[in-house]
Length: 389
Ligand code: FAD
Ligand code: DHB
Image (tube, rainbow, N blue to C red; front, side):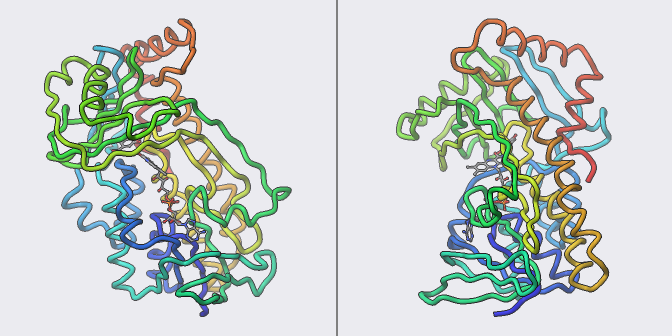
C-alpha cells in the first residue's frame, strides 16, 4: 500500500483531516482499530463552536448539520436557584451549534465513502517506522496479515490511548497533566429538554449539566466519585440526583424516561508537547485532553485539523514546509487557552471531595460575579464560542 498521508485513527480528527486533504487533492489511507459500528456507537461531545461549523461546511459535510443542528444563542450557568444567562450572541456576535459528535462522524464516513478513500477497520499492532527519516512507513495487521503502508507523512489521530504519541521518545516530548477526583456520569434519554439552552449547574450536591441533542432527545450529566460504577446508577437514582442539582425552576419542567445509553468518563487535563516528531504529527485527543466542562474536546481536534490540513497540502504539493514547521506552535497556542478555560470552568462548577468552606465560597462568588458583571460574562462567552483559529 502507498499513499501521501497515512492517518492513524478514524475518529473525528482523522476523518476530518482526511476529508479536507482529499478535497485538496492529497491522497490518504485511514487505519482504524475498531469497527465502524463501534466508532459510530460512542456517545461523546454535543456542542460545536462556529469555527468548527465553518470547517465542516468547508469540508463538504455541513448539509445535514445545517438542517438538523440547533444553533444556540447562549447558555445558563447556575448556582442552586440562581440562573445566570450568558448571551453569546449579544456579547460576541457568535452562536454555537448543538449537533452530536456521533452525527459529525457519520457525515464524515459518508463523505469519505463518496470520495472512495481507503479506510481499513479492525487494524491492530500499528507501528510507525522511521518518522524522523524520509521513507517513513506504517506497519500493521489487517485480516490476519502483516501489511505495510508507505507514505510521506503520518497523522496521529488515534486518541489518548493510541500508539502515535507513544511512538515519540519520552526524552523528545514533555507531558503536562491534571487528573480531577471525579468523573461524569452521562445518560441519553428520549424526553424533551428542561430548558431551551444548556444549563451548567453548581450545587451543594455537586455538578450537573442539562444538555440535549434535539427537542426530543436529552444528554444529561452528573458529577460522580471515581469509585462509582454504572451498576450503582439505576435510571431512577440518576433522575433523582439530577433533579436536585439543577435549579428548581428547571427541575419543575423535568420529564424523565428510560436511558438509552449510560456511561462514566473520568476528567483529565493533559497536553503533550510538541505535536511533531519528524514526519509524524499529533492531532486531537492523541496530543491533548480537556475535561468536558466547556465543550472543548472535539472543537480543539477541529482546530488542530484546521492548522494541519493546509500545512500538509502545501508540503505534499511542493509549496514548502513553512506550514508544517509552524504547526505545533500554532496549534499549541490555541490548545493552552482552551486548557485554561476548561480547567477554570471545571473548578468553578464542581465540588471537590474534602474541600473546605472557603473553596465553596470561591465558586459561589465566581458565579455571583458572573451574574453581576457583563465583562465577566463576555470573557466566558468569548472562550465558550471558541477563540479565533
Ligand atoms: P477519538 O475520538 O478518540 O478517535 C481516535 C480513534 O483512533 C478511535 O476511533 C480509536 O478507535 C482509534 N484508535 C485508537 N488507537 C488506535 C490504534 N492504535 N490504531 C488505530 N486506531 C486507533 N468532548 C466534549 O467536548 N464533550 C463531551 O461530552 C465529551 N465526552 C467525552 C466522553 C468520552 C468517554 C471521551 C473519551 C471523550 C469525550 N469528549 C467530549 C472528548 C471528545 O469526544 C474528543 O475530544 C474527540 O473524540 C477527539 O477526537 P479524536 O478523533 O482526536 O479522538
Ligand atoms: C455536552 C457535553 C459537554 O461536555 C458540554 O460541555 C456540553 C454538552 C453534550 O454531550 O451534549
